[in-house]
Image: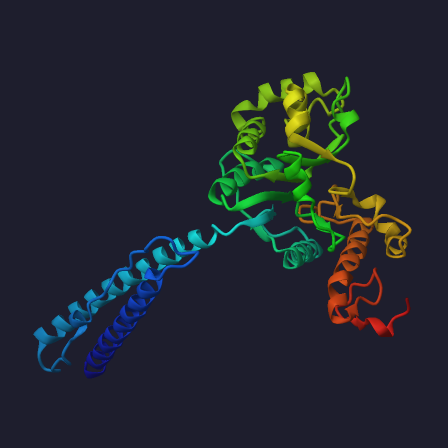
Length: 386
């Protein structure tokens, strides 16, 4: 009994001390928040805890009434600690929102299923694709949003990206451009800067890798562009366009959307449910005049570079014999969802990843011993043959 009472007394004293500490920190934070600054334009309310209320006498061991009183004081202190912690979270949320008002050139949005990949190799490849995107942003000053969840009921597959983008655009008004990038796509030219100034000057709001003559052909080709990597400006026009695009994948519209896509795009498999790539080709042809003004089909650089055409040419690219691919997209390899990954896909990915990683490692005088190696041991550049 004495041991239990002693523990209760110690807990009460510790809680009181921690509550006073939190109060002092809260007062200090409130004082800082009241100072004018570029990021803090409004005062954030912080709950104050009155230190006078935290005083409690050490109870006498033989007095049950004092013991009950001490327990009540501890409960009251815990409640005030909770209030203070909640206030801190609200304050940090407010500071975070204010900090986001700083302009951000662009944000890369990507993601993968929340369940584990089917193979350890698939999980390893997904980790590397994420690292590659972070590396690119560390060089070019962007941020990466990696999503694992479905943000709207009824959407699945490639369609889950559109409710995600809609919410991110609305929640991040300081982000000028968003870049959707499939998880199986990586940057293979880390030095390349996206020409946003050019797109802004041309008043373009959506940039997709594609071919004008095939998209707007008499019989549009659903493979004339690729929806796995695209740029979209954060503006009202883009938000409305994404809503139209997303609606074609909504579960309540599947039947009608399938009929509409099949009626215009004869090249797509007619038994398929609506896919987002065909839906984009369809939308571009539905309002061609506006599409040609606001949407740019990029073919001057590889915003989407098909991996099978690239991975065998990397040595020639390093020697300047071939054009550097900005993005290499391993569409069709199904790294995370497949029960088996083909040797061609896994070996091709390793070569492309090492090719990109060497560009970053060169900053510290290191590189992979060769493009095909999977070993983690790096070599100094000076010790390797040219």
